[in-house]
Length: 202
Image 1 (cartoon, rainbow, N blue to C red):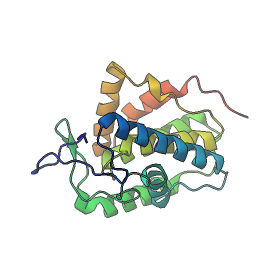
Image 2 (image 1 turned 120 degrees about the vertical axis):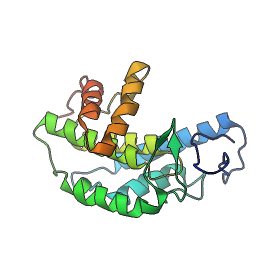
Image 3 (image 1 turned 30 degrees about the vertical axis):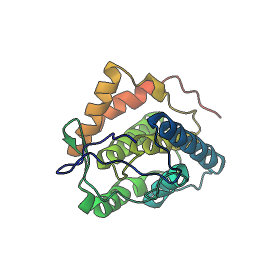
Image 4 (image 1 turned 45 degrees about the vertical axis):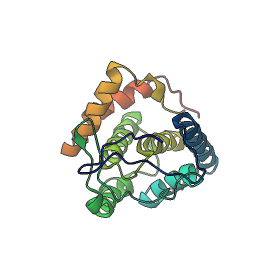
């Protein structure tokens, strides 16, 4: 098994899984299939009344990874960092997610008539969720599914996340870090870039 994050003050930790998979490529395939199935199920059940809140985010994670990990759909209980950048403290995750829900998620409008407002809200939700990093594994994919569901609910096609590579990926990482200062403008630029060729469905 393999390690993607640094655990401050501790040794590199493996992630035991329910399927007994050992090879990194097997684990990666199982995770990929889980997130793919979760996105399909959630897209099929998406309606104008769907509410994106903390419970919904936990649901995304559980649907995707419950077949593989016991921590699926649960907040992490360890502190994580990547490349020297510390994510939100595990101790404060319930409070961080509650504030995220109250101040951002529950303020989202039911419908959007303004494409720029949608881009702003998707960027804010995406950057903040990635900065909080509530899960032990699967944070980026959970955040991407949520972003795709937000734009689909508003009548647009999926975001083109495959464009985030090379220098753009470096900007993406910096945009997540800027969320620690409540600065979501860098993420807005990225969301606008991967949104630009997404035609409206109706």
